Image 1 (cartoon, rainbow, N blue to C red):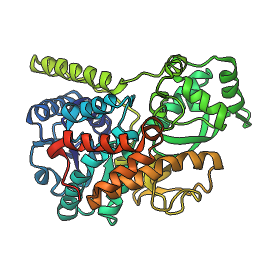
Image 2 (cartoon, rainbow, N blue to C red):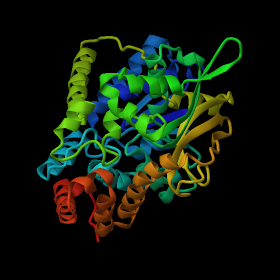
Image 3 (tube, helix red, strand yellow):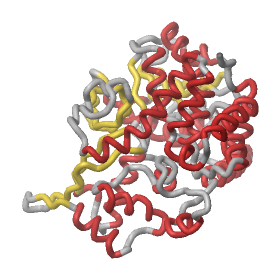
Length: 438
């Protein structure tokens, strides 16, 4: 019997999507779903959601387990899905935004790179160490699927902590953005062939072609570039179309994310850039507040006996599980150790590339070399990722300073002394969420 373990299952809305995807497939009509979270109240809500999904799909043989004991949840698991947020919205995410603002450093999402991404990684990696040790002990053959940001930093750390574990990092940016571009062009995504490669959130579409009925193909990049030149772009996507004009390729993650991965768009004293590109400062704070309100509403509805919507998503987890169990092959975009998959990126960094999946597991496909300008932009991120991973694993405070010093957005806004003081303030504010550093 297949056992699927969700770590951080109190992320109820995301858990609902993953469980709807998995349980909608008849192959898993008698699987075990093991839910774990350290927040008992949120866990209880997710358990109700899981049971009502089973009721809605008429799956009486599915066994639902919910526990605040991680080792109990992991014991004998075939698949482990990570979806936790260490430190939660309060205090951790609020701290990631509030303290940098005292220094004049503004952010949009702050979960991938930048000073917010660095500290999210620093507080997540020690927990990943504990989880990996438990997996090695309790379910060493399980496939570990990570959805937790900062994706590349966390997956890089997992590879250092437990290189023998089977693992892949998963995101929805490639499939969401490909569909978005098809809509921008008035095309059906079913007619589009694309290839993307890079690192999570800074990957680029190397090919974006339309298949015509006569068997011919059309490169859609000229039409995308024409949208940018003519100013016919969605108001919330001005940065990505600007990057398309400057680098020649379209980046997979959203404009609000990409705005803080470089030194180009958020600048002190340049509010004209914020207005010109429609950059939503503090966007993640707004999203978190909305999600918390949505969770409270859902909990109230569930306590009143409301049914749960079975909402299918385009997340990769269910497809991967299905492929490994049945042998039916598929293609995903996964985050894995580079090791030569992309020639002009560091061998030990984590890249996001197409991967074949079947009963043999997740098998990355070699891409070769990226266009030089794309590899150069990506290396701005991998420098910070590498230092953050080793700062966390070696517990070195000095390396945290250096990661922040090399971060494109942070270093463009603050002096070295300011960066040192900011790091000190963030470490103090995080308190017990971080280990002691040397």
